[in-house]
Length: 134
Length: 172
Image 1 (cartoon, each protein chain N blue to C red):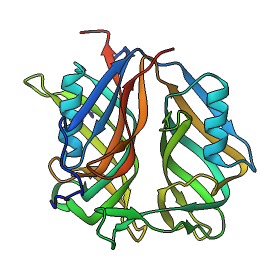
Image 2: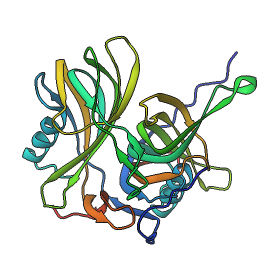
Image 3: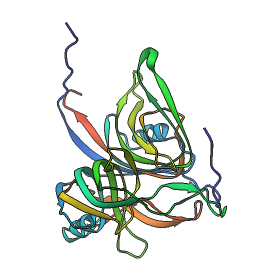
Image 4: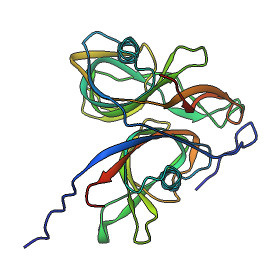
């Protein structure tokens, strides 16, 4: 039998509007922004912007691989994700989506920590998630 | 990971974060024949929404062009947008996002990106320019989170020599 499905009751809370400047790592920047906003849990409502280069992971286990997309100016086309606390309570961002290179070729996957440096700007809106059981 | 060197000096802080109250949400349908960005921004402004986070949910475009970044051959900036690229055969929306905020001139500004399938089913996308994204049959559906207390305001960013949004505190 597979593991039980996890269901967490809660509600959405405050919004955080964020700008990451050039050179900020997308994943690390979202984690630091969540910490600054005092969000333990959060969901990405919107993210638009561009990256100097992009590194997107896909697959799992032996089939796991990374797409590396060279910029400058890799456009973020879509992004979804959430922030969850790690075992020490620090925010960890899990972000995935699609990007386009300068030839409009589209790539998808999970944004890898340390591999997605902002080129010009990233405009992001997070919304706090408030679990009932905490 | 390659870093970029912009024309201006890096200005602290490298990350700007402002928090506000939970927003009111809207489902907006932009009808066939409308320009997407004009339809969204004019409708929201008329409803009193000046700052918003927008998710493009579904829809089609009878005509759509987008722009992607290219290395700026003039050397003035790290990158610059290329000419609009038309999508052949109409476009089916696969996803996208936009931010509505206040422009330098006090009016509305919207930054929007989308990913679409073209008439052959190939996937492409980029930055959506104003006036070049005409909604097709069935309209385009968007989920809009209106922002309270905080939002985005456009300003001239000396570091990148570009007009960019940054978080701002807003008044009702």
